[in-house]
Image 1 (cartoon, rainbow, N blue to C red):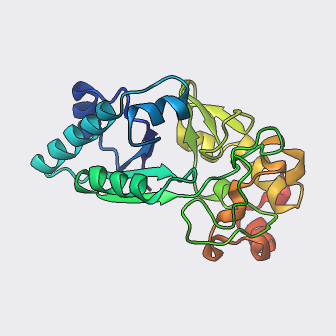
Image 2 (cartoon, rainbow, N blue to C red):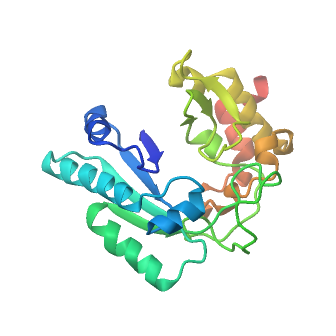
Length: 233
C-alpha cells in the first residue's frame, strides 16, 4: 500500500512541510503550472508566484534529505505546447530538488464530454507519455486505488474533478470500510459487466484510455467476478 497526495505547493509552508515529513506519507506529487509569474497567472487565472512554489519545494526536499526521510517528491508539469526553453527551465529549477520529475501530456480527465481539458490538442499518448491511448471497458482504478478529496469525500480515482464518482466519506467511515463497502462493489460490478456508461464520470473518461497494457482488465472480467464474488450482490 502507498499513501500519496498531490499539491500545487502554493500553501506548502515550512510548518506544513514539517507535518508532511512527520506524517508517514509515501509520495507527494507537486504540480507545477509554469516557470514564471506571468505564465502562472495565465494558466491558473489567480496564483502568480512561481518562486514561492519553487522555494516551498526546495525547503521540503532539503529538510527530508537532512532527516533521511523516505518521502518521495515527484515534480511534474503538463505540457501545454511549451517551447524547449520553458521545458529546460523546469528541469533546471526542479530536478535538483526532486526525487522524480516529468513532463506530462494533456489529458481529458473523467467526465470528458462535459469539459475538454485537452485544449483541442490531439493527444496520442497517456499523461505520462509511456503508453498509447487504448479503448477499454474496465478501468483499473476501482481495483487499485481510492482518492480522498479536499472535503473528505472519497472518490474512486484522483481525476474525479466533478466529484461524481464518490463512494464514501472519510469523515464518517474508515478507508478500509469504504474500500470493501457496498458502493465500491457496485462501482466495480458496473465496470466488470460492461455497464460503465451508467456512471457519468466514467462514461466518456479520457484518463482510463492511457493506462499501460499490464493494467488492461477487459480480458479478466470473468476471473474478477469469481474472485471477488461480485455476481452475488
